[in-house]
Every structure is written in structure tokens, then in C-alpha cells.
Image: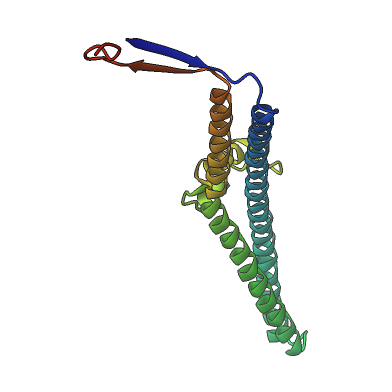
Length: 198
């Protein structure tokens, strides 16, 4: 004796429909979370790269200023030796050179910190030389930004977490969809002897 049974609920008070709506909403929320995380990472990479570009530009400008101040220092020494200028002029120029060195140190430190931040975001060691060789003018080079963004999105723990949530939500949707399909059961029975006769 074999029994085949197919069961399908006819009405369950909207339970399946509400569960399906909830699962789809969770999926939409998780996908939005992934997109939000992508945008945040992209903004952080662009911000760090911009910080480096600004700091690098400062170091170039300050280095030129330092060269001018060193020429002025030599001129001040010559004028003092000739008796044309007082010795206090030398102190003023030397003080300005010292301040310019401090500005240069600060700008280099800002550039190094921006490179470190980029390295952490993209999970790749970067150097100032690598970033400099891609510079082709005042516009931020898109090739470098695209590469940095790709690395950041590949290795970002926040993005991996958001993707995992989206996958869980997708699995919940599939689970709810499967609950709407018929359940098929197969049962095999075997009977020994005749239970109706003595």
C-alpha cells in the first residue's frame, strides 16, 4: 500500500503574504545598506586622496618659498658684510626660514597621514611616488581614484558586512517563497497478514 500526499494551505490569514513582504523589505533595506556603505567608502577614499593632493601641493609651494628665503638669507649676509644692513636683518630672515621649515614639516606630515589613510582604506601599501607619477595636472586623475575605489570596495569590512546582510535577506525571501509552494510527501507502507480476518 503506497500513499502519496500533496498539501497546500488554502488560507492562513495572510501570514505567508506578510512574511513575504517583510522578507522583501529586509532585502531592500540590506541592498540600500550596501549602497550606502559603498558611497561612504568612496567619499572617504576621495577625501583622503584630496587631502594628499592638497598637502603635496603645499609641500611644493613651501619648498619654492624656502629656496627664495635661502637666497634672501645669502643676500642679507652679503649686505651685512658690506655694512649696508644691520645684523638684525639676518635674524629676521633666519626666523622666517625656520618658520618655513616648520610649515614644510607640517605639510609633509599631512601628506604622509593622507597616504596612510588611503593605504588603510584600500588595503594596499601606497607611496607618495606612486601617487605623484599619476598626477597630470590640477584635476584629480580618475584612473588613480578608480583604482583606489575598487580596492577600498573589495577589502572594506563594512561593505563585506552589508553584503552579508543582503545575502541573509535574500535567503529569507527564498525561504518565504518556498513556504508558498506545495509540500510533497512520499510514504511507503507494507502490510503483513490480513488484519480483518481472524
